[in-house]
Length: 456
Image (cartoon, rainbow, N blue to C red):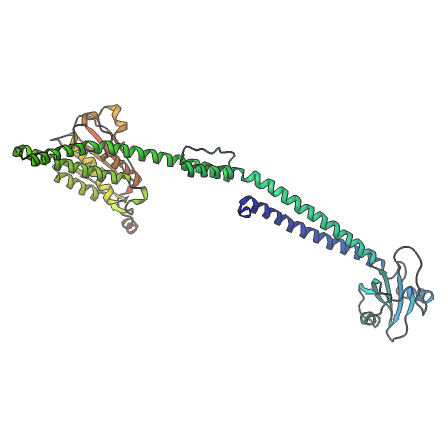
């Protein structure tokens, strides 16, 4: 399980990355040192400064002999010998060198270059074979044992430095991972705490403005939104229970009276029985409306019908006709306006505005107008006190003067929700001269997009 932690993986990633970088750097350093040492050795070979090849040949012929001999002196033992392309025996000045086909090829006029070779006693030598006369070449060589020992020491030193570098990188990676992931650890503990306790009031301290800080801020915003949603849900359930209690109590009382009459054999007066049944029917209708309104408000923002471009003036016309069928006296003045939204949701919102206006102006006209995206619905009732206007779109809120009127207190809340879904807003104010006026502003155009494209 420990290998699955983000801290361990981050530490390993840093250590591996640094190890690769150190390995590449150490390898490059080793190759550079090796090249420089061999280059320095190669500059020691060949024709001495100030002598041309023929002078070197004459000097070597006096110095060398037919028998190899060891040079007794301190430091690397140098060897020089003359070889002939026609196969004559070499002339030695120092230990004998193994003559290869490559050396014979140089003696015959080939191109010379330094190379590794052997002395006849098995000593590894660095050899430079150069042509000094037609068919004659000089092999100049020095042992490479000391250079090899130096390279081994360099390799061991670089290996030790690389190992220490990897160890230091792993330690630094662990410390960096701990410091970098400390905010993530706090966020993880907060999430686990919320998952175990469902405490949405948990707040994570935000430090700095990096990605972790933005993640913490987003998490705090999410928990705040969830807490608010839960509180609204609790409030909705509490308000719904309160609103349902009255019609349910009335229904139960009326049904108990009817059942007691049947069980005792004491029939009710026909008029009283008719009033009870009418009241039961009205209570059932009120319950049906309340449940429908609750379902409308409880659905999520993503559960509405797909939004499409639609003629809002036709939606308002349909709502006006439905209101007239319910007995409302509506006067309308509608101009074309196209919006993007849900026809069903917007029609219900407009109908709720008209019903609300008709409820507060019995016997009076309701004036409905649509002009450049602004829908106005005005009644000629008593209006509302100014202190009540900010609360009219709250769920289950009802004006004290409207307690005796039918309704659930959800109609205007549904209007506000429909307007927000379509990207608009709704307001309610007292109209000049008496009554109240509701205005809904929705973004849109005077003609359909397809029609505007054709006109262009």
